[in-house]
Length: 69
Image 1 (cartoon, one colour):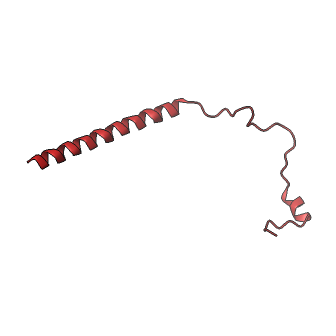
Image 2 (cartoon, rainbow, N blue to C red):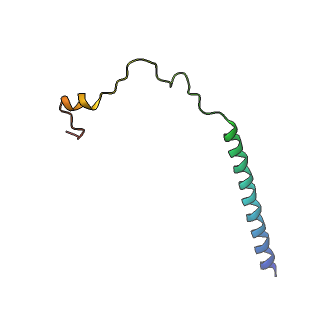
Image 3 (cartoon, one colour):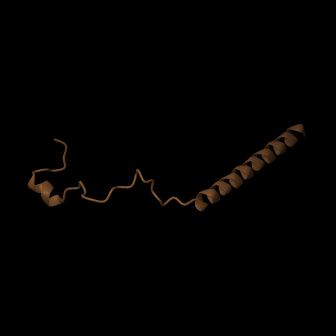
């Protein structure tokens, strides 16, 4: 009988822990959803001006194949 009570108490504690974790995750998700992430930091944003990307035509004219030499 004591074993059955101990198993029931263990199952109750596991269920209580799972519900607590679930509520904390929902609260955390609500905080993340309320926070506005789309503005980049000023140091991270790229300055306007020339880009350093080459077009594919320039890469082919220089003989670059894209493979490691």
